[in-house]
Image (cartoon, rainbow, N blue to C red; front, side, top):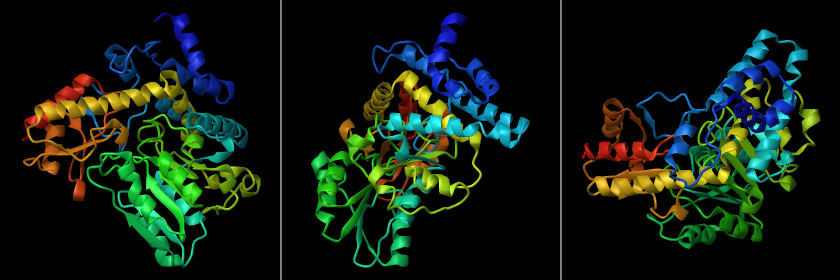
Length: 426
């Protein structure tokens, strides 16, 4: 790649941040380490293209990371931006120097809004999904006689957290169980619709479950809930950054996500979407400096959190630009292609393999959870790491097994090698 083409690419990709004219020396240093993906993609399995994408990450050779559902690496462009902007603050901590950062935060907010199909006033940059979920839980006014319908596969911050609030305020939590394994979207939606009553105030679900890999038909559920006057909270921890999401089209009232998972962004940053007409009635959990200037500015009132990591918050905008440089639809297609390829290879290589995650891509996402009669998940995960340099996760309870969550920095060949490695353990 010649230097002129490289500068042109950097200018296009980083235009949003550079336009903010904030901490220019830091932006320049991060730009020097940007590595360009190929300019076009012919198919989701165009391995030459995805090899270039992998080169954007500081992943050591020979190591395969299959746990994006928990934590994902950041590309150089993001991690360097965090480091360089942090050094800008350490170099000079004056209010004058730090006053540059609000422009970067607003650029990040605008980028997130466009990325998620929302408006800037509907987006708060939080610390993670847990904080975002609890902001909604704490901010709603509920009491005796009210009901909240949730999925039993929700993360504890959208499950146990409801039980804690119910104990305090007296409302009732209804936990819905979906059929394992589901075969249609209608079969997934039916238990939730049956659980809604005239007393239901909130439907709180997970877009894709980290426990089973099952994906709910959230657009249909949100539409049905709205017709019944029920608010909807969608935990998007496993779809923010892995699926092409349009929140206005989805129709939810609240959506949450973490930057450190599939979004591949800075740690301790996340997103909270609050539909414009819901912001005024949702109470803020934390009120601090800047409240008076934020309380009437939509979702910004949920960012009154005290001192933040300005470098990390600002780098959220860089992460959006990284996704946009590749293309949200391309990333979505690639993640689904990786999951499909993995399911196929595991079925071919591992005798008696059983999937907790639906094989149908329309009922799942990037997570693949599986088991086998002779497979003990804990020792298996340890062996995969120690013998094969493959990192994955384990699941317990009803969906006990191994959890693989490959992202765009993983090749099809690495998935083949992972399936072969699993076969040696059974």
